[in-house]
Image: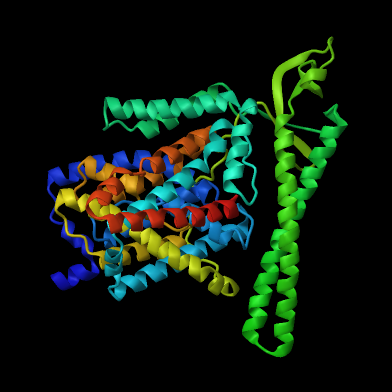
Length: 537
């Protein structure tokens, strides 16, 4: 029997009593109420459309629960690995493109294979080499960087991207006079609602209620409110010229990004083939890529500045018979003109039309239906380039999963087999990559909720995944108006709750060397994650 359980560990759940089924059902539904909005928010961190977060909350959740070691660990999209996934892929493709999605799925497959190999060879014990202060320092650093990367979405301003994250963050604060107040109101309202419901009754699904309420209000009051106009309607030639330059530069950035990825790919292929001529061609391609990278950096700086300037411009619309016929800078609106009473800001350029918005950003259309089975596209030319990132993600993700499993085990008395957990996590990522899932891992917040609501077996996770299936099949259209600021607040609340200072203070008193190690871990990781954030954005 023990031999069979090694291959089918979920057999330990049986036989189940009515009490166990009831507890797992309640825990599964409760976790699902958090899983749906979280998975969409984290997909955006990964540079992917929100639907890929829902895909990652389906098959991988089921597989990890069946083949994992912990009964309360919930696997799925997590903030840190979402950010790191985007950072690893950004060098090879533009976020949101088909190539970016394909490479993200390939990366999930690589992470899964590495975790599975570590589990098969029973190397899970390596996590024991990491002391508690090290894990705390690691978590604190990640939480700070991930949380502040969402700030611009909360106040509705662009996040200028340069080589200095702290300078960029400072520039966000400098845009406070241009804050979009309704965006901030929605974000603040979601935070108050989630926090308030948690204090009133921790069992209430505060996250889901906040998502439902803000989405409903967003739809009722037309929070998004976008319009597309011809450049000829804008009565400010300087603004039109700046928008045209922004659009052209954005296209050039896309072309350079593609050229760099193609050059790197071709160079790797030539180096692999060998030969003096091929090596020379590879070096020439890499040299050209370096030139492109320098130019790309310049263009990004220019367009970042231009984007901020455009956001600072406001326009008033002039209507005739309820039709928008002209747009004037806010302070130059003709005295006798009939205004539409809207304050418009630049949003984007699409199909030679200027997209303006007088509202905030929403999730938008989400494809309906379940992910189809599809073998991940293997980019052999990128395999070695992605391997270091895959290895780091495999270990960091496993450290996350093990940390929360052991924390929960201290209250449940459950024995956690780290090698078996590696196998479960590995299989989850491998299988998930065939169904549109990017890299997943164990979740701190959802696992804690599962334990708190009385989950007895991994069946609770399967129930949460089946709830996601219902969302994908029947409810995606109702999520269109969900404000992006609300998703940003969900991410910020989730990661900031992970920051812990007291354990480091306690460690300083009883284990000074361990505390020093945790502090030393914190600062280098801040620098590493700053690099990831800069690469992503």
